[in-house]
Length: 310
Image (tube, rainbow, N blue to C red):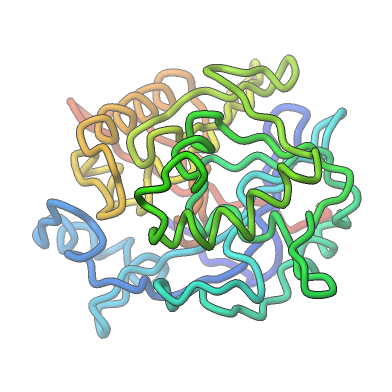
């Protein structure tokens, strides 16, 4: 795998008629060492790939994986779509220190990409973990209100039902249900801005939501289709680029391990066969990869975006 140096500025990728911009919230060390982050981790595989892993994906001095937390802003002729909304500001995440009571300029970065919150038409959450729903809402006069007032928020019905505390009274102490769902999902539903979808769902002719379970029961992905090769926004189907070379590794957070492995391989096979870019939620810079088959496995090359505005 090869990686180009990054400029530090915002970058964009063109996929067919659409423009894609990464909106950063956080970039840095994972909260866990590699063996604590990746189930089945084999250090020999990491050492084999040190040439491209350092420094954007692994810090050897700290023995820490480098991960990003970001949204994808997808601009088509018809829609401004925000895929995954990171961790958010002012959120109580005592169980996850990396995301607890953040103060980041996320909305300023969104505006820097040319889109104000009121210009977002669709927010799609691939799943409802805390680092994918936080900016769904913002604190206003002591209440959590939708950040994107004109948006339709799309959630998997399976995913929403799984985390809804009202449906799981016996697990009321789970903070993802008792806190995260209540401050970042329920206010959107109560505001009448949520759309719960079952199975595959077409947003329009070029955008298709598909189930991608394993990391969570109702995880979904988004395919941006284009005759010249599209893109797959895969959420947490993959967490780190090493998983392209070791797709049998799950993250420690994958709730359905065998299903997660099967979904990961299916996504990699699709990207390789259909020449689709892979756009995950947590890869370090340059964040986007092109996947191809290598024997019975896969290899990938990072795809550097162009400076925003070019």
